[in-house]
Length: 208
Image 1 (cartoon, rainbow, N blue to C red):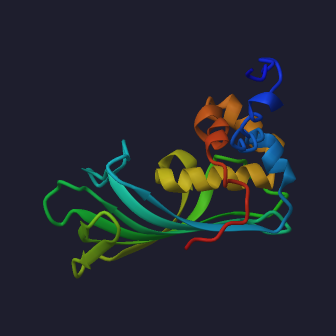
Image 2: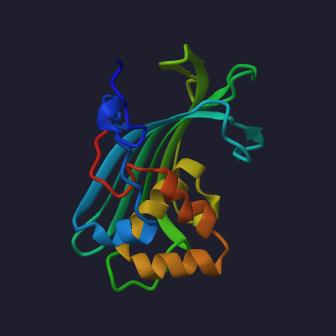
Image 3: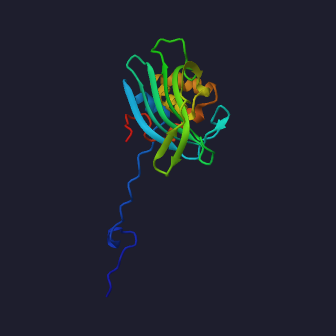
């Protein structure tokens, strides 16, 4: 005679398989920003392949980029950002690329400047041609196209990769004030709430 199995008894059916562990939910942007201690520093490499929009320099649009970002906030709340890399137009005629290094800073507190307003900038660039195999970008410069400039530039005039890095640093530097300015200027979704999709933001990470 066969043994009766109680359908309500999990053990009788061999137990219940363990569910795969779920990742911890990402905490809200401001909570993560408040948790950061100073000094803070991160570096990372980002690639944008045919995904950039509205990025024009001297009338030429660039849709791809490979950039290395190094950013930080010092103990006295000086904001520092260094970005280097290439912009290029995948299907464009040669020369199709723009190599650059940029440094962006905002003074220590107290300062007359406010988040997402203007920044001290230093910028060096050179035009040339990029070939990209899907992994590595190879840049061949055009001689005589180097340029260097120092300026004060508005947040909205900076490259998108710089704006995203600056947003993270401003939120670390002064979370409440930075979030207030973003909301008042209707930029919270683009440069504040967006960090819910960036699990490694507000962490001390290093570029490979």
